[in-house]
Structure formats: structure tokens, C-alpha cells
Length: 204
Image (cartoon, one colour):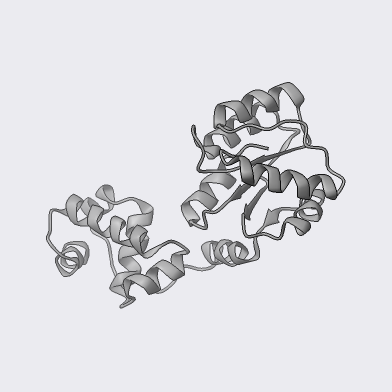
């Protein structure tokens, strides 16, 4: 188990041990997580994301070097970029720290049985990601596509459909601040001053 907050590690350890698990080692950074995982080769590696060295990087390295160990993220971040980056890194689950500690033991046992550990709110996000794409308002010019990332494109598409910043954030399971940052980046990349100008550049 790796998390840079000792109090959280102690809370999770108590819950796991009460449920019959043995916590064989702890770490506070991504580097320590990789080190103790390689030393103990645990059944499950429980990782925070926002710790020094980045938990997603640790998940990728541990998944590569210890494919027999199940990696599960335990984080405060409900950001879908963190979610999908974690899954691409090899994580078998993604749990929010709001998860009931008493339920954590059963969820992790499910992981050992081949089940995915996922907070319910995030399951909906995954389903939305793989459903048929929504109505497209913007028809992208090739030059614009080359400048924008897929997430920036998604943000602008939702805003072009008439959604406000908060509505777009809720649909993407990110914070309104994250949406504003993406918009600011788009404006800078397209060298325009406002959203309407950006829409004009992006529309054919």
C-alpha cells in the first residue's frame, strides 16, 4: 500500500487487517511503492495517484514487472483522465477514497477472483466513453485537429452544443476548473480571444 498521507495509510491498514488481509509493506512515494512491491511481490498493490513520483507511473511499472500482482488505485481523484490513464497503465481497479473502508476488503477479494474494482460513479463514466458518440456540432478542420488534444476537442464539442462550464464538467466527471483550463489552452493554441472565435475557427 502506498500513499503519502500516513493517517490514510493507517486507516486503510486497520480496515484491511480487520477484514483478514495482511499489509506486507507501505510506501509514501511512487518509487517506494515499486521498491516494496518488487521485494514482497504482493497479491494486491493499493496505490494513491497524487503522491510524489505519481501513482499512475508506479502502476505502470509494477504492472509491467509484476503481472501477477493486481494493482488498484485508491484516490480522491474522480477525474476521468486519471481514471483512463490508470486503466491503460494496467490497474485492475479504481476506487475513490470515499469508499467505505469496511467494504474495501470484499472489493479487493473480488479483484483476486478476476473482478474489476470500480467505484459505482465511475462505472457510468466508462459506459459513456464506449457508447455511440453523441451528436457532433463541430466539424473539425484538419489544421485544427492537429492542434487540439482529444480531451480539448471533447470539451469544445460539449460547449458548442450549448452546455455551460459546470454542465460540461459534470458530463466529463471533471471539475469546472479543469474545463476552464482546457478552454484557455484551446484559445491559446488557436490564437483567439474567446470561445465564439474558437468555434468559428473550428467549424467548417
